[in-house]
Length: 277
Image (tube, rainbow, N blue to C red; front, side):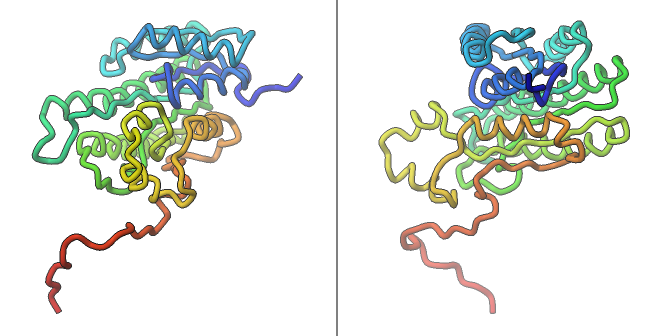
């Protein structure tokens, strides 16, 4: 019988009810990990759990816990839950938000800014903090913490989403520092930087607007959006011992988008600025 890449490891996944989180749950379970799925919606968690059990049957520990990552007590409760299994080995801080009212420097409200940062930044901090405490508590010298950032932490976005972009930049910087601070303890911190993915939310938003879709697809050398499973495969690698010398990485799963020079199609709508000579 094949020994899984995460055999006997205990993992916590936040934002596990759908998307990258759910796909990662299935992969982790198939590779032998005990997985605690967490999310803010109990209904979504139950639906996700049913799908995960269908795709990864006969798994020893595949359980759920409602967690609001913006509340430290909730995150601590998740880690305490897994401490009863023998402690955390893998922490995937994946939960995040991009609010519909997120805009530019003028139109983003303080309420949206604080909400976004409480979830996207504080949630990652709390998850990282309590994962380290669990690893130390159980005397482990090999732990993997993966934090979901974004390609907009690497390149600017022409679509205003200031609070989200700033929060993901903070995740990237925090992950790098944690990677250095805890390296000699054997704890690895890496940041996943996904490109826009082919999700129902995105497809519903694009609808039948071919021009709107094309404006986004053109940025991908392959001409297509990524899939959640493709990001989950990257998370599995970072969680496994195969990535034992990967630390502090900005792990872009973007189809080459951030490495491509692409000129937008169509004529310029305004004259170029007067340039000093």
